[in-house]
Image 1 (cartoon, rainbow, N blue to C red):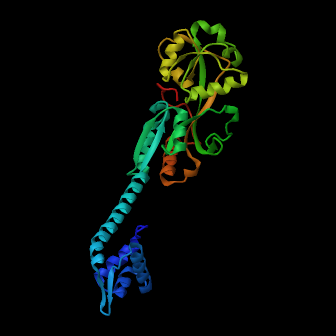
Image 2 (image 1 turned 90 degrees about the vertical axis):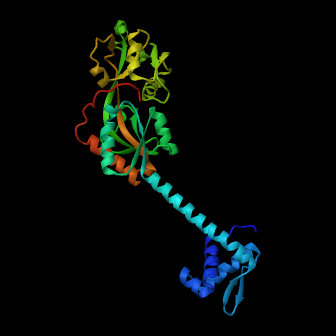
Length: 326
């Protein structure tokens, strides 16, 4: 036997064996008699066995047919179990939302978003995965995440004139909903004030900088500034925690970026200086694959995010930021 029998053929086989006639089997299966007869013929040809004795009184199983009947029942049962398991998995996937997070929960209003989404989509399991900005975008592209917070590192003069309107990014692959525009400042050791005050990006490119992961918003922002100048600055340290950038800078070895709102919240004596001629404005937003934007679970996530951030309303600075440079 080269091919496995189809479920329809097995159902016809089982029903004819139970009912003893093609006509009654056809009625129960909601098929025509010729269709049932054709299924039986095909099954006998596939197995190379005669399954029924055809008599004027009806159909009776042959020895081979009787031996295969229990296995036909098992095959149909297994097919039903397979379909039920597939349905259960599909339902589980529909009711699960995988969310990428960056920065800190207060800054992104993560708790409020989760509460809003829970109220909007009761029964949805929300899975949070914290990571670096571009890593999370890549996971969305591969289907490992459904939605994510994302920092768009495009310069402010290239940003939409309608800051709260959704748009596509990365060549149209991703749908991006802006939530908040915010500013990164350049900070330097206090004793370097004469090296940074009144200076522009070309001057700052000659100084040593703190490195952050290649997939962080920090790295992309700075690379976008320095590459057009001809070369990237020397990097003399590395961290993936925002609070640690302050420690590095205060140690007197390098420059770094820091969120404006983060600097405003530091209450201890600051042993660094903020460059006064340069800054970088970017956007915090919410992103998904553009092709999946209208899926119910993802639409609910965007709706919940709008309810939290009220796009079109006040986009003032978010609450206190803490560790992790996007």
